[in-house]
Image 1 (spheres, rainbow, N blue to C red):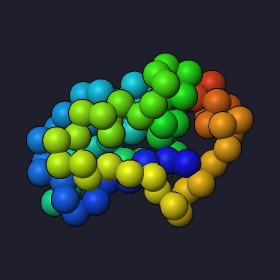
Image 2 (cartoon, rainbow, N blue to C red; image 1 turned 180 degrees about the vertical axis):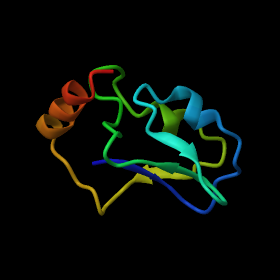
Image 3 (cartoon, rainbow, N blue to C red; image 1 turned 45 degrees about the vertical axis):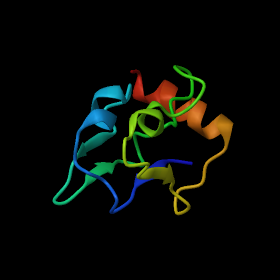
Length: 81
């Protein structure tokens, strides 16, 4: 499952710097996570780093993009990052 950023985002950019897949970028009012690039840090860290560093606790699971561990691992390999 990809992660998503809520409207509670304070636009600090901490999450963008932590993403190993460059899945996070500035949007109009909040940072945004590209579900095609988000692997929840599978293969790099034991948990999503963006969520750990968010001071506003604005990052959580994207229920519209539910994936298995296996699909996240395959996505990570396909991204080649």
